[in-house]
Length: 222
Image 1 (cartoon, helix red, strand yellow):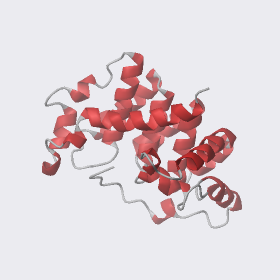
Image 2 (tube, rainbow, N blue to C red):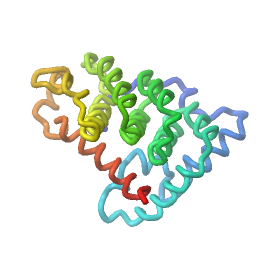
Image 3 (spheres, rainbow, N blue to C red):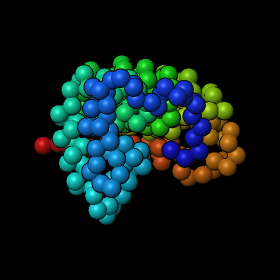
Image 4 (cartoon, helix red, strand yellow):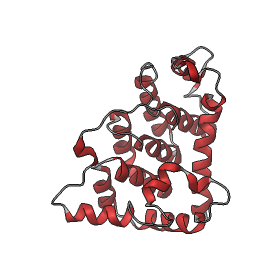
């Protein structure tokens, strides 16, 4: 997520509940677990599992898919309650296993944008669910945050996810945002060093979502 300025969270957004052993156990099991030389949340945040030749790719992915199937809804709710690290991990597990019951929860978290980094995971999960309802959440997010040219949140990830859903459904939810000179161009152009940069075209935003979703589909499809 290049060129991002996030809401500064309160200290409690990062801290584990001091007297909640259940939360600590779930975080240790799913967030801090090691499938490479780093905790899972760092691998998810970096996206390096998508890079060809990463030596831990198969081990990391098999563990991720297994945990996405094994984690309970109650445990996912626990992860969604506190901080960007658990929320990022929960969003990926929800997306990989396509837990539709969490659509509204993810949508609320995305729209609130309380902490950094987790929004990319929410957008991935919504793209994986891939219905009109998910598109409507992403549209609501872009309606709210694209006019905020002073904020570099998860606008790119939201647009990429919306374009992915449009391509799958044959819809055009993203069209009002991507017209030449429209909201996307205005938002990108508000930061001079992004103007004309290939990384910030709508196509490049969708490419990242496609990589993530195709990765998940490749490991979870029969």
